[in-house]
Each structure stands twice: as C-alpha cells, then as structure tokens.
Image (cartoon, rainbow, N blue to C red; front, side, top):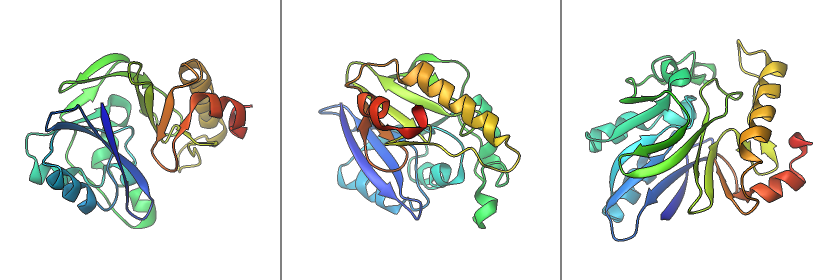
Length: 213
C-alpha cells in the first residue's frame, strides 16, 4: 500500500491518496477547501479514484467533493450515517460560521456500522469515534500498521468539541473515551495519520498527548 499526503487549503487539511502497487486505482481520504492540487496529483500519476471516504462532515473536509465528482463521475462517496446530513447543510457542517456556505449532494454510501469495510477494493476497519462530530470515524489497516484518524486524534492533541449546539464538555469526554477505548488499544507501532498536522504513532500519543492523561 502506498500513501500520498497532500496538505490542502487555508485550514491545511491532510488529504490522503491510497493506492496499491502497480495499479492506477486509488482511494481518497478527505478533501480540503482547495482541491486543485489533488486533481493535479491524480492526473500527474494517472490515478483513478474509485472512492472518497470522509472521516467526518465538516466543511473543510468535504469542500472538494463536487469537483471530484465532476472529473470522476463514477467515484463513490462514503460518510458515516450520523454525519450524513452535514453534507447538505452549511449550518450543520459549520462552513456557514466562516462564510463559506458549503453544501454538497448526499453521499453515495452511508456507513452504518463498524468493522471491516471494502471501499471499492480497499479494505479498512471502520472505528466510530464520535465527539468532534457525531459521525466521526477512523480507518485502520492492521497489515500496513496505519490508522487515518481525521479530526479525532492529532499529534499531541485531539479534535475540537466547542461547536454551536454541542455540549462541549460532554462531547470532549465522549471523544477522549473513544480514543482510549478504540485507538490506544491498537499496537504501539501503528502510524497515526491525522486530518491536520504531522503524523504520529499510537505509542507517542500514549506518552505525550496531554489530553489523554
């Protein structure tokens, strides 16, 4: 498995392209506010994205969906059911708060349960980790020792929970509990690939993340 990381847009979103060796097919995890570097990368490497998995429904992670659909009409868009309504509502996806007003068409596939999921040929274990959003997910691949954590877990930090309509304290408690129960139990050498910022490992987050102690 090969991974290409792109940092996109004003919020410096990490967008990941996942591919297997000797194949033009790929999987995309999240987008950013500026999708042009992603589209350019796909064309430069002659890649065909079969699926886009959204780790959650905030505007900075979903903004590029329609441009991807335009260039790759057969791509399948995945999101957890608890965040599905965020795609079509600028208020719910919080883009209205910063004057972006991002609203896109519904996802092609709604993720309804945890466990091993085949994303058009790319298999990951889906871990539901609500807190930052109700439908936040992480994607774990044990064979390659990687987990894509979206805005659930960062290097030495965790996702925000102080959004309008949220009980900030309760959401943070929920997020921390999910990180402990579902992420920190993974092997220490698992590479953490977050939605923003540098990569880390499970061991480093156990030792150095101040939010987890």
